[in-house]
Amino acid sequence: MVLALQKNLNTSFMFGFESIIEVLKTVNLSLFTYFLINYYKVSQTLKTILKSLAIYTLISFIPFSLNIISSVSSGVDAEVFGGEAGITGFFSSAHNASITVSVSILVLIFFFSEYSKKMKIVIGILIIYGLYILLFTYTRTGLVALLISLTFYFMKNLIRINFFQLVIILSIVSLPVYYIVSNNESIQNKILDKRSDDQVLSSDNVGSGRFVMWNNSINIWAESDQLEKFVGLGKEEALERMRVKIGKPFFSHNEFLDVLIRYGLIGLILYLIYLRSIYLFIVRNTLKGSGSMAIYIAYLINLFFQGGHFFVFEIFFALYIVYDYKRKIELQQRQQ
Image (tube, rainbow, N blue to C red; front, side, top):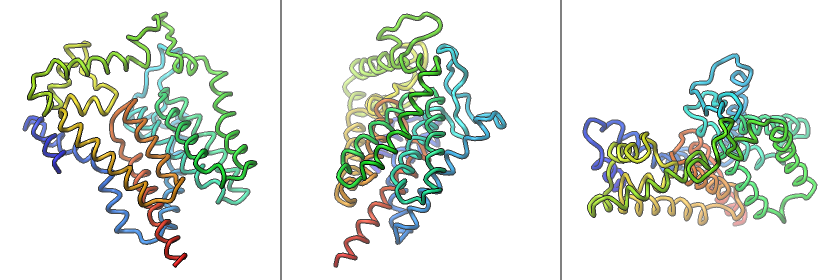
């Protein structure tokens, strides 16, 4: 509530409704988690929802991939990398699609061993298709989040996972990625920031200009007066000062820097406390090596390299946290 008040104080009355939406987007993970804990009593129901939502999310991209339906948003302009516009499906942006596809793949991999032999083939094909979608969103954040989260998960569960099964899962994930990347020049160019307009790679354009936006965000905060440093500039003024710096009113592509310049040191401290509370809840209320911590890592990667709170991704995250929470309680009850 304090963070909500902080956000509203730094937003004009004209944009009051937008401010409320921004507050809800920040704290909706906690709201979803609280609701699910009180609404669902058994982990099995949550597991079924997670599996179904992951499968539906990936299948939903099929008509967009086949150009039967046009994507809701325009996606990443990949012409500069020698490709076409990235796939976004029914999501509002390429990054939204990317991180949600990543968590869908994670969920299917976490539950992969529970499927029947025939269903494993179907799920394996879906995972490969998900990787295809992930690559052709032309965003790297989702792919990085997937790979790092999977690495963390497998390292934590190395003893419990059958070696043969691990090899199969890693092959399913890595071989299609290698094949698609090695046979598609535009994806290689995007990964390496190699542009078809012969623009020289430098600190000004590497990471799609993130370093420039990060540096200017820090400068904007440093150049603010003492009051603004503590309570922030508000969304509108922050965008205006970024426009003055780089010519366009962009966010910094880093949620921590966005919070710092919009809501000041007070807002950033509150935001870090909020993120720490999520971490502590996972550590204290889920089993060791659970998928919740792996998804939390993906969550942080998205916040650091892209910024923003994406609705469907956070529904996935809340569902998995509560699933792990209920599963631990059920295990403790059986042991009594």
